Image (tube, rainbow, N blue to C red; front, side, top):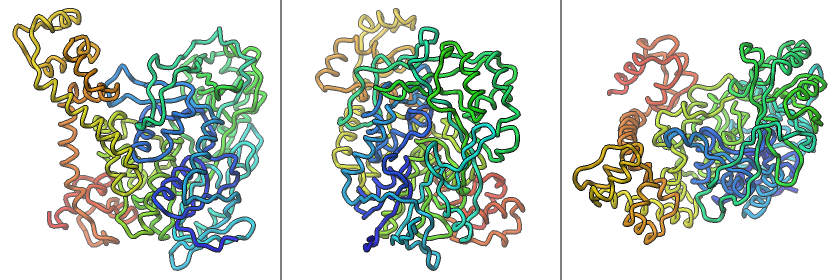
Length: 623
């Protein structure tokens, strides 16, 4: 049946698997995407949204590299919001509320239109390895499918167990069976595995809710979008979300089920995501708070189903129901399905290289929740990088690795490989040292050329980026070169309670003031004329404003990154024997031997390796 040998086999068609398959196939590798149910490609298992704080930056980076998550998000969006607009641009984070079914359908359509990509519906029960080299996969029906590389993106399916109160049953997602066999085989090959936990809230019937009792949460007045390409358009119409709150009465009702909660009775032993706790966990940990926010989010354009963000729970279904009925606006609520927790296997990511290829088996890659991450965006970005590197490996080309000052994706993967994770890893802006450089508005400037060079980003994408870059650069130069007379600018400055100027000054200097905006600049006739004459987009105007206002911060951060990158250039020999460096601390020797960092810079980021240990390494390396 499968007589040919594939270049790449991707196991699992979630967010990581879909991006991995698309990347490998678009680069020219003969690819097979194999999954347990082809109807659930890129399923939004939890909340129907993409992006958010730091996650929105990742989606824009995926798009800049030629991935599909941004395009699919735009095409299936029902609401758009730019979060953190009151803060500096390093913190601005785009987020879309998505139509869950449309999102999955759009992904499937894009994949089906991708050349070099085949599909097969079945459970992969094992991998085939010879002499520490991957040679294929085995399925539950006994088929062996040969491949040069394999990417495992199993999500929450590896030996998944679903918990609702004191009830437990095997499953990788509500209504879908768990995947078995792979963990045991990997352990026999020498891999170390662990268990993690995540959860999801109940879904409810919107017809049973009283939205008049809730706080309305509309989208942006002038919505933007994720993809840099003109093939997607900003939303014209949007669906509202809503906000309500729990109360002491709700908390008391929830507490009645704590003795049957798998979180507290020992049924769940694994660690859940710290930054997305269950409602019972919130009540327990923040006992001083008498209420918690609940975000009531529609699942799509034409459905009555709503997602209750903030009410993730694994309590008995009747406790969930009774407590929800005490929430304002939920008095007559009808459940579509209760919330649940799920435990699953993962493999500590210190067992990987920066390419996401495993250290133990050549040609075997891991991406997504199998690496201990949580979130669609984190998974999708890993899938993209794994797909790219599987293709490059087959073709004996240099690996594609993003550094920490180049992308949030680089921060994510370096954190996983270097530090590992014992709880579900979620990306935050605070994890990045260079977040002024890694903004959502400039992901295309940072990454599109790199992707075009390896053959993934299209020429159209490159030209769109180059045009925007040139227009922004020229517009900044216009502000630097153009002077403005006091009688023209002072009325604007007076209106903003800003110090008046006594003589002509460069526009750049005036625009650099914190309370002066592009809107103020556009009120000046010759600036407005320049914008119209050059047909400048909102993206170019935003980019120009950021470059002018934050030029000092950007230059300082770039300088810091350049200093650190000098250590990136000092390579550590492969399989280096740290035991011979007697001046290293015992902990440093242990950690360095386990992680096997590639550079001195990576070694410096390992927990337990001190500046003194790095000095010892530098002396040995002759620096």
